[in-house]
Length: 157
Image 1: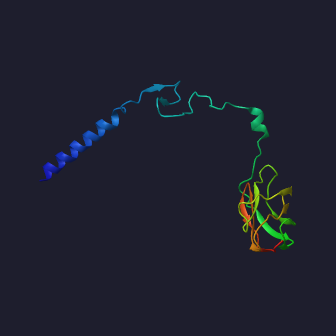
Image 2 (image 1 turned 90 degrees about the vertical axis):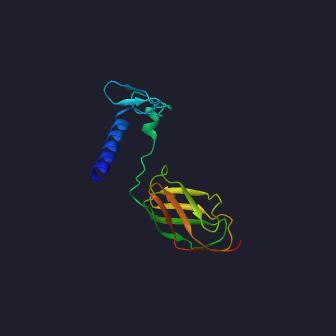
Image 3 (image 1 turned 30 degrees about the vertical axis):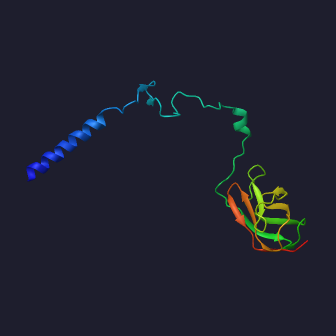
């Protein structure tokens, strides 16, 4: 019984060794100046190929560098009792730069476009959109993530 099992395991080991040592069907490899292999049909590779979009050094220099390690935090929103069309001032920290700041949203009207003005890393001014009356959170999205305020009261127009 043990010799039969040993023979089966030996045969399985030989089969695996043969399968691992032969190249896959349809994969043709070609060496590229000692840096690795390009497998035809494997999609985009990084060896000896220029990006499809090309390279623009001026664009790279102009692109903002957003600090993703600093999470934004809303300290307060003034005033906290508003009507649609009113301006609010959002105070906090780590809002980032103008290029890295993404959006302001009110939970009472999540799909409405909110007009806002980025003042600096700690201050944003926003206009309350048409939203249903009641309690609402103000949400900002910056390069380091998102932050939500304490609730504010939106009154009817």
